[in-house]
Amino acid sequence: MTDLTDTVRVPFAVKAVIFTFFLSAFATVGQITIIGKQVYDLTGSELHLGLLGLAEFLPVAVLAPFAGAAADRFDRRMVFGVAIAAISSGVMVSAFTVLFGGLLGLFGVRLFKAIKSLINGAERDAQDR
Image 1: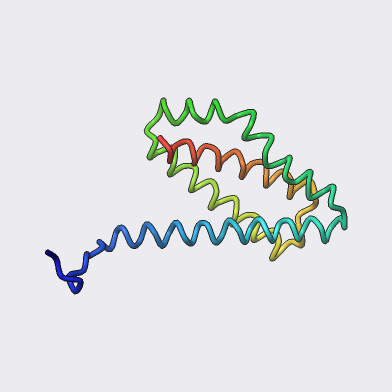
Image 2: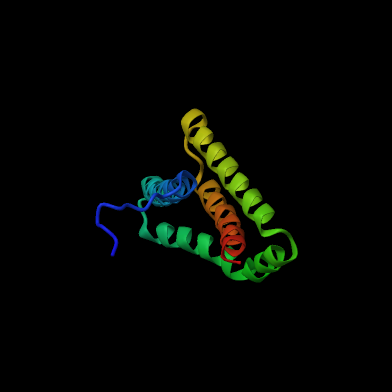
């Protein structure tokens, strides 16, 4: 029988992956909240919040089969890495635009969400396979 004092050692790489997934989920929730608040501050309309959701959903619904095919055809690690790099680049461009150039216009916010949604779809397909 094993003693309760015997502990299982979790490798550092596993801890790093879990921590990275936590940070990614935290950043995603923060981004959803901040962009929603930004759209509401720009427009004062709940309709535009709904249109923002549509701008995020529609590209995924239309292009999900193509993203799945890309994840099947190419090395999924490469697809995943390119998707993560594209998401990171898009977030950085969005952050610099907001910080140094004023707010993105409403069209820019919707376009950013639509592109990010497409890339997230490719990332999920590559991750799930």
